[in-house]
Image (cartoon, rainbow, N blue to C red):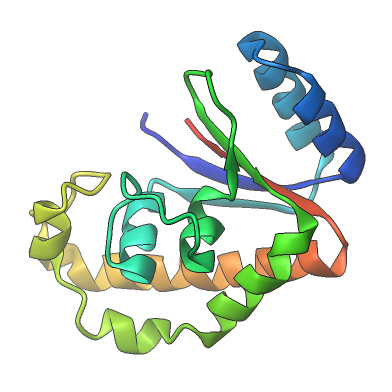
Amino acid sequence: MGLIANYSYLSDENLKELKSLGSSEEDIIDSVEDWSDEEDVLLDIDKMWDVLHFVLTGVGTEHRMDDNPLSQAVLGVTPIEDISEYMAYTEHSQIADIVTALDKFDIEQTLETFDMMACKEAELYPDIWDYDDEKDEIIEEILDYFEHMKGFYKKVLESNGNVLITIY
């Protein structure tokens, strides 16, 4: 198993509850798991979150870009501190900027110059960059996850919701 990124719709009520949970990791994780079971607006980009961030921004996720909506699409806007798993949320007021940035981003042109060695040098997760014979499959997977991410954020925007991101 590895680190998998999941994105889910987060209601205003659940966002308010999340903000009030404080730093009790067990309470936060239990609540998030309960909410995820209830939601049907979900996105799972498996292990490709780091490389997707790299393709969108030119850097891996260890270089979070707080003022970049493309970085925010992958990592969220507000990280939840003091817990062992990565969690962040994005409030509805910021979703439109993310949708606009994703719509404007030319993923196909960017992927024309996709470089497996650059991913290896950036030490991106997962460590699959030595398998150059799988480059076309990886590019197709990145493109597919990007398109699903655009659709997910558009659904959340239309539903006036928030987004919860978990990577674990």
